[in-house]
Amino acid sequence: MHVFEAVDSRKSCRAFLPTPVDGALVRELIERATRAASGGNLQPWSITALTGAALADLVRDVRAALGTLDPRNLNGDYPVYPEPLFEPFRTRRFENGVALYRALGVARGDDAGRLAQYMQNYAFFGAPVGLFIALDRRCGPGQWTDVGGFLATLMMLARGYGLSTCAQESWARITTIVTPLIGLPDTEMLFCGVAVGYADENAPVNRVRTTRAGVDEVCRFVGFETT
Ligand SMILES: Cc1cc2nc3c(=O)[nH]c(=O)nc-3n(C[C@H](O)[C@H](O)[C@H](O)COP(=O)(O)O)c2cc1C
Image (tube, rainbow, N blue to C red):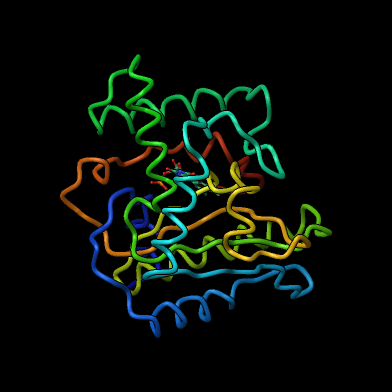
């Protein structure tokens, strides 16, 4: 697959087919993703990959531990967004939520419907593979960025295998529940989860095509004759 196509076709997948992903392929995907650049070549990422019964047990145990808790109000080791969220990010996040829930047919005031969708995060949206991405707690912003680069590389490479993904910060909200279940050492901090599998292309939630700010909104071009 051409790199442009990989980037363009990557989107957050929130409904997966139950089709398993071959273990050797998952290993290869992660191995290739470790080619991501990192400052000083520190390679600060740490991955836990689950599938099959191990994944099913985790999903069951997380569901039981969550009970009636609303995880949308929780923060784990780091606040997922600045509080309060400011412009223009606030509006972008809001519009993203509107598009997602519209695709799902969940009405604006239907908080139970929204919560039900959010809880799908904790089943990896039905994906056959769940990844947890963590890093050493002593790391700083530079290494956090490196982990983001690893994540992006992994999600692009997944497209080359015909796989879809969804990065999930929602897992970081329940770090106290999930960390012991996946045996993550106390020295590591959970950054996010990633659902990996084959997309259910017929699912309405997967038809969402998110928008982007224009290039002039995010980049100042200096010294170019034409842009
Ligand atoms: C680090 C990170 C964490 C994310 N966490 C979640 C999440 O917990 N649940 C979810 O449904 N989507 C999550 N997303 C997906 C974003 O909402 C999505 O990337 C964004 O809306 C742009 O849409 P696109 O990925 O389809 O291009 C996350 C994305 C990133 C990069």
